[in-house]
Length: 328
Length: 251
Image 1 (tube, rainbow over the protein chains, first blue to last red):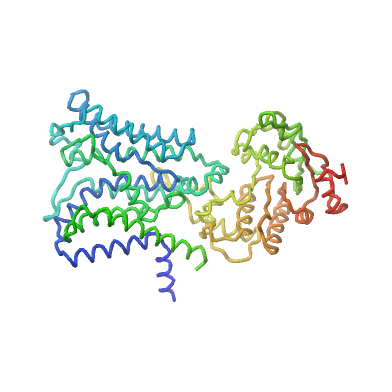
Image 2 (cartoon, each protein chain N blue to C red; image 1 turned 60 degrees about the vertical axis):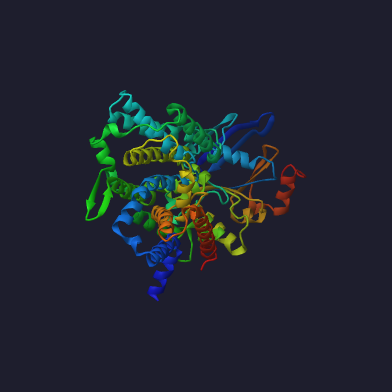
């Protein structure tokens, strides 16, 4: 009896579906190609996963508050370009160029937040506009050419952000720790802190939250800033790791990130969000991308699988929701 | 003579050229339940929004215990001890009962970076409040509002107002869409609130519900208070109806 209720409780959690999907994915890919579980493949998969994952974590909180941000992909491309341009032109040392890049990222989020909250324009339109402005700025600033990044080899900051080391044949980048750290901090904020209660209330019923004295606008503006800053950090980390700051990089990431978040069980319309679900969603999509190539499906077919996963997970969430509301 | 809690003096509200409130005077005493009646467009909702700080007045004064209060936001009203329970909109359905009760005033433990909500205390107080307000079923405080019935939701909202020492609880159509048993429950919660020393303004279309619970009835018509001293014990539903529709000037 007790076991059954434990199982039912587990089933009722929004993270249950994504968890099962992730396990199925891993089992299927490993069965077809055992190399899927090789240390090299795992570390390769994780490397880029955590960079997108940083954005997805911040996006989870923003979406829980009922908004989303389409400009993260362009911020991911723009801020490293800005950082390396400032550094290469010897305007600023790397540390200050880095701080400037993150700061500008936060300011982009601030503008998004002000437009959405004060002018009451839907975040879809505001951040779509911002996507174009930021991407355009990156292209204009660089005339479309990538910025060189190798001038900073061995700098403590680049080591601190993305330094790598080996555990056996398992290559680990420092960014993995940043991802784990960010997941823990944001989980704590969303579930345990007063701010988390405000975030969920802002997305669930903004009027009720306002009537209780919760500053919904301020909450949302902070989250827009968090989201853009994380996109900036992820962009910088990625540019250091790949030794390339391309003004075009990050194109389409916004949709992949939003897909990761909703697959994990966070609701697009706000009110409910889960960091654990997002971590699962991030892994599901990245492992899918890696796995289908490894088992011999043409990489070009990747989008078909992602689309199907999104549709399937949405159907599952809606089914669970209806079951939940009918009191079973 | 009962002590005066709220006095609204010559309240006017214009929307452009449309006059929604036409110089309203209204008082509510301590531990008094006042029924506010009127047809659609009579100005009840506008008056309540003014009193709860949701919209600014064009002119007029509001006194709480004799002290003038400027209602510029809902926070001002809450700080002055005025709590408004709108139908359905007062709660976040995704959040638990306890999280709703303490929304905006979450108790915290720990310090510095590890400061967090005191969820244990929140749940404990919430359970106690639910019993106090008269919810008989054993509902755990971690239940999301989405799983509650309409009457239970009203109970949570009323419990919250009582806990945070609101002197005046404004109930806007609390019995709308409720079944017979649930309505009886809500009316009991209102009586409970009076017993513990709170005042209420009770707005409802159903005059029978108002008659069952209030001490005094105020009728509004076209932005003005037309009668403010109907004693439900010495009056009938039909008489009040005639005043609301304007067939009679008083009961």
